[in-house]
Length: 247
Image (cartoon, rainbow, N blue to C red; front, side, top):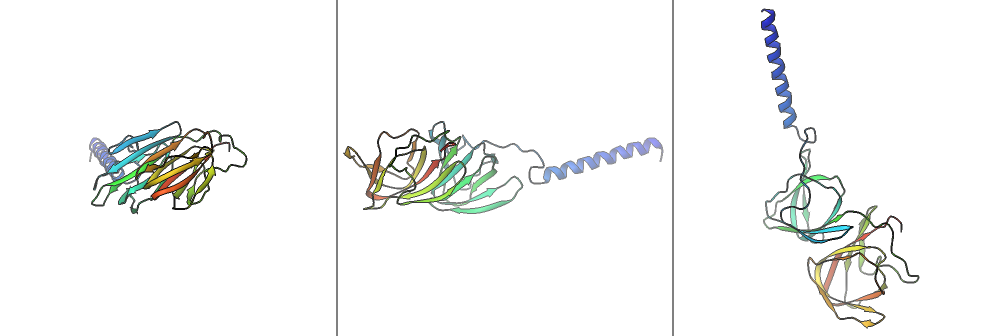
């Protein structure tokens, strides 16, 4: 074999080797090969319900069999299930897990999470998602002798992070929630409907109703403290209590 022929053969072999390596890398799961990530929001099936400087709240419906692309979360978020579903969570490395999400199921995903979600049930799912954009710099002024909103009767803390606490609250007939102030911002979504009534220094206020999916946010101090009474139904809500940097 002449020198020229050997050179051509070596170059051909090198090109084939490079092509094989490239194909292997492209077929490998995970972040070895750079992938584009879609933003979590806005997205198909998601409606912005409320937004302020601290929290954005989205009402999300995913159809049966629908799949969102791989997303990277730019902020931490808390998802609360309103319509139960089984979903497939897929990671960039190709690993996946099935999760059954009953009513009131709460998932926390920190900033930087990368995943896609596929609904595997025969019916659509519905969740409300709280994007925690930031936390307050300081708590609101405290009135001596008046407790804060949490902890309180009927509320169970599910978990907490450095930025917030998550509470599961149920109002019950004949059980009054004592007079309190809101000393930090909060956000909530109702899992079950019913009627409630507040009581303050001016007396009883008219009852008001809450329904599945109702979202409320509190971003400013209350003028006066109030107590809360159950009026009808069995209201239940998941609350986010934001933790200020300077309590």
